[in-house]
Structure formats: C-alpha cells, structure tokens
Length: 131
Image (cartoon, rainbow, N blue to C red; front, side):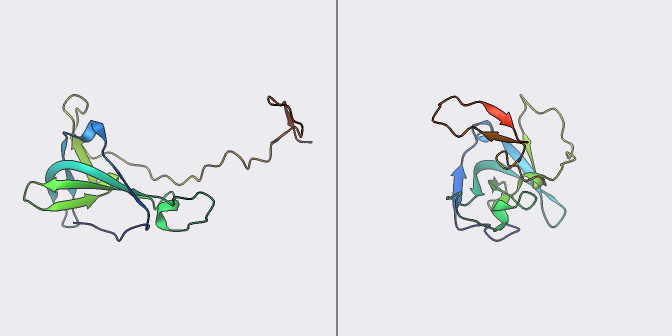
C-alpha cells in the first residue's frame, strides 16, 4: 500500500539501525491499523544542490519518506513517518498517536544579509557587521 507517486527520480535507500528489528503499525486509508516489520526507508532529494528542483521532495511541508514494511498478512506497505508507530520496547513506553507538527521552515544560513566577510587572502577572516 502506497499513498503517493514517487516524489522524485532520485531515491535513496536507508536502513535505520534502530528500526532494523522493530515491529510497528501504520494507519491506512481504511482507518484501520496494519501491523508489520520494518525493512528499509526510501527518501527522495535532488542529487545536485545547484539545480533548482521544485518537486515535492524539496518542499519542507510536502516532503515525505517511505518506510517499507513487511505486513503480517504477507503484503508490503510504503508509509510516511506521520502514519507509522514503531514498537521499540527498550525506548517507547506509550502506544498513543503523537501530535506531529508539520515542518514549514525553509532553512538558509547564507542569505541573512546581517554580516559579510572580509575581502582578503587571510584564512581566518574577521566578520564585521554590515553598515
């Protein structure tokens, strides 16, 4: 079960060690919980930071990864973070649904306009305030 098309032509596969032996569940479109075991995660981002990519993978509040789950009924699912709850007995103590907040900030530390570097060949340059 997958809810969305691929977010980009550039997937990356990761296997999160903390989830490698985890069982869990996700809430489906049918409003039912589907139980299974974590296999790996697929995430998307453009491979070249110099190329503007306006796909969903580059928009903070639209970005989703897909956790691949081997379901107990023999099927597979690809579900985002906000639909999954993992059972990690040594770490999690509650089985309630978290109140997730959506990431809407686009972070950029280089375009602040508040500072400039000196224009010399010094390796450790001084930073001075813009006037």
